[in-house]
Image (tube, rainbow, N blue to C red):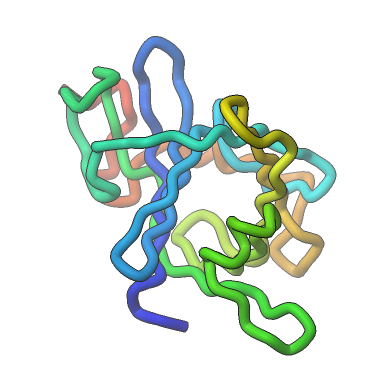
Length: 160
């Protein structure tokens, strides 16, 4: 795994509460808005909408970048890309193919997750799904049970 492969999930309370899933790789950042947040249940598909964000991936506070709102770092850690036919794909390859499978080593989320493109063009949309592995569970809902920042320990409501 490359040291440059990092992820963060920011909980963003703006017009509506949503989560921003961010992958940092090779000096680039790929971001999706995940309205309901990630799920640890592999039977659940979460809508993930690609976004351009000027908010730094480690930012906490009140954002004045584009959409204004309160932001916490809900989870962060490292990731690596799964291989396909014994060939390790890059993030770029997975995004171009429309199917990216990664293994997260976060403080709240661990194990395999897949992003699957379901629409392209101006209405590009993806599904974010937990893969069936040892970290998959339908009994844990970290979006509800673990609402605090992994950086400050604050809730998004406590940010000022």
